[in-house]
Image (cartoon, rainbow, N blue to C red; front, side, top):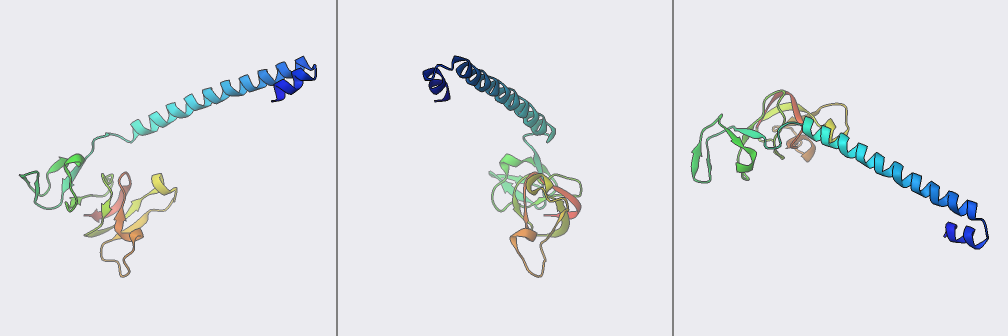
Length: 145
């Protein structure tokens, strides 16, 4: 509209300036988007393996195959109800509910909160905040199942 108005009024220099400014803005936007995409790719690669494994906390049956406590299995083989063990310093591989143990969990990658959040299966008042564990977060201390 600005270009048409400028051209209609005989201000061809102004029309050319508007076209130039919009073209430069589009080039800057494209460069910025490429930079953001590259940064996101680096972050995702730094998170590690895209097919993590989980350690079983109890004997389980996975698709008709008996698996022993302490055995590592692919996360894709987990089903609802399976209990996994997560030790200090390990990344929680999948979302779930804490059924045993107590620990602080670094959820800063998800929430931006700088302080670790306490997770406790035996909390006096059970809330989602203290019993839910999210995949990708890191156990700071303690042990969770």
